[in-house]
Image (cartoon, rainbow over all chains, first blue to last red; front, side, top):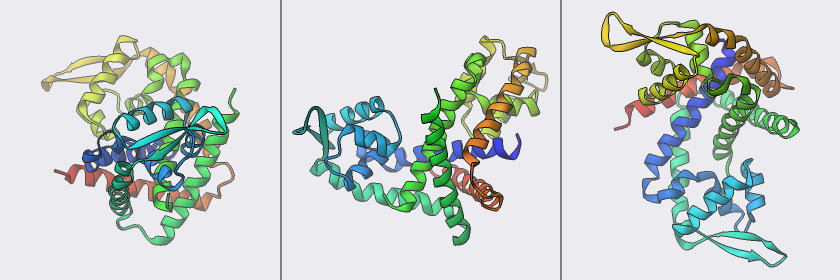
Length: 146
Length: 146
């Protein structure tokens, strides 16, 4: 594999290993451990509707709907009909959902410390900036595709 | 989400959008389009056994076994008993598998051009180096976990 193909494999490794780490580290959070970004986004945007969640997580509405259904069944979130739009629901963390937040934050912090071990701060800054720009390029390209 | 949590979300976006792009771009390659790294690795290491493939792709043997079974069923690869180890199989690309390689290479090249649009070469070099180091950190950490 050339350097560019390998970069895609490394992205895949970081994705898969982060998921493995999180599901082990967040075992006690049950199904919520599989939706860390949704939980963390709700913590900052409590009451977001499913469309807003899908936009924030750059995923599709069906994926968000499935996650919301599982999280509601396990008591991490609750839904309320949006008074401004009868077809939409606003999503809120329950007390159980809020109580899980510190575990999520410390799991991410631990994972990041693991990844960043031995990497100079200047390289990390360039890395994060480049990663964000690439994600934006990816999102525009997929949106633009027919 | 803080910058470090966001970085994990961006990794997740790059992973998911690359998969979406590849499966669309490699539709004609059928099931092989879902295993681009395995196909590309075999192209360089024809005759690798499944254990070597799992090590190269940093995945588990069960995942490789499932992929190999699907790819064999669709005629992209063939397996031969390893003369040195009766329990192991060596995996080879068939003519159909080899014929698919240019499509894989051009799909990756196109995806990388999309991601890298507007990013200076120096930033890309730091990005790739940091990404590789992070992947190595991730692999060591997961291996070391109980």
